[in-house]
Image 1 (cartoon, rainbow, N blue to C red):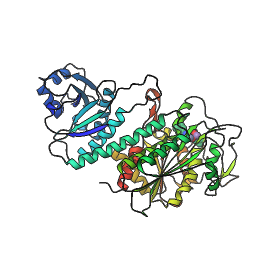
Image 2 (tube, rainbow, N blue to C red):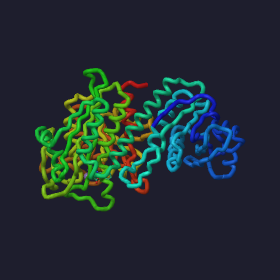
Image 3 (cartoon, helix red, strand yellow):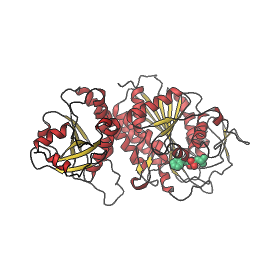
Image 4 (cartoon, protein in one colour):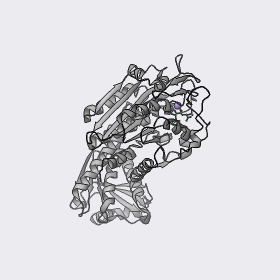
Length: 496
Ligand code: BES
Ligand code: MN
Ligand code: ZN
């Protein structure tokens, strides 16, 4: 998608469509008021017709015959003027791009009125660029009659006279990097599990390495055996798909600076193994590589940004299948860290692949380790599909991530890991069991399991089981939490 910054008379700009805001009070925004005059009140007439309410997310597409350079105006509801802020801005913009998706419009102009200035203007520009890419995204590569119309080819931003051109350009660059990262995350999530295999994820990492000059290392099964990654291998045992352990390194920071390590759960399909899942909606377990997709997406953002920070990405990836050779409930395996683990439920496999990855992370002497994983169904019960759960062995790191999420409206919430939860991890036969405490507090006890492998560094865990994808009519990957992770990395890199 092409972004540009426009100046000059809005009425004269040649474009397929201009976006115009309409408050619930039926008041047009500044651009709308100007265009309305030039078109002999065409916008006012449309509003008076009652075809658009001005409520957040409402839209109405108008064809304009004369008076302005634009062929169309898309009226977009902004809600009440006094509650119109960042969130409402994003809601309106998403609705606008959604409305344009079914049309022939390929280029649009967004106008920021003269009241817009300061941090908020650049925040909105960055967000708009990301949302434009997000809004134009479609996944139809596996449909025979995919819609090939070139939606969202170009977006022009018409800015108020007083603005900082360099900052505006930078905001678009960041938004674009985030949007492209999210698109990759969504596509990996949406691809079916017969295509998006561990090998496919490894190939994707290799492509990123080539594109952005990352260092790449793919550990094969025999390498993992040598390292003693037995908990990881216990999960992949019954699958015909070879497991992979993907390592990507971006050395954008100073030589010797400790890296931020991102770790993503890469179960490309989770049947539950011998502790088999019920059939209903099992197809959604193709999204169980959502953590891997998110960190790969974040690496794309890092690469596009040429971020001045050292970042390492680790993705343990395999399939969790039943079979004659599968791990049994009751099996005991030794993790890379040397703890023996009693696998009481083969469906609690995410923590088994992550714990070896968290041990592997030690060798990078990380500044911080952040993992993202669709780890527990209990997370969906606790926070629904709105908020990502954060667990950490250091409160400041959790707060840093919450703040990064807030900044990008990619919300997350810090949950506790008190000793009382940790004490539940007891096995009669091994050092630790892979499940403990029953269903109660399932996301917390899962995080506590991981915390046993993170003694060497500051660590946070994002449970994205509820936020990485949507079910129902709009089934699909959301691209979360790429913007949270990106913002966290931008800040760590010292971007203002
Ligand atoms: N991948 C699932 C978690 C999950 C479930 C994510 C539903 C999104 C939606 C994970 O591997 C799993 O199966 N967890 C079990 C843990 C249990 C056996 C302790 C769960 O949540 O039921
Ligand atoms: Mn599972
Ligand atoms: Zn899983």
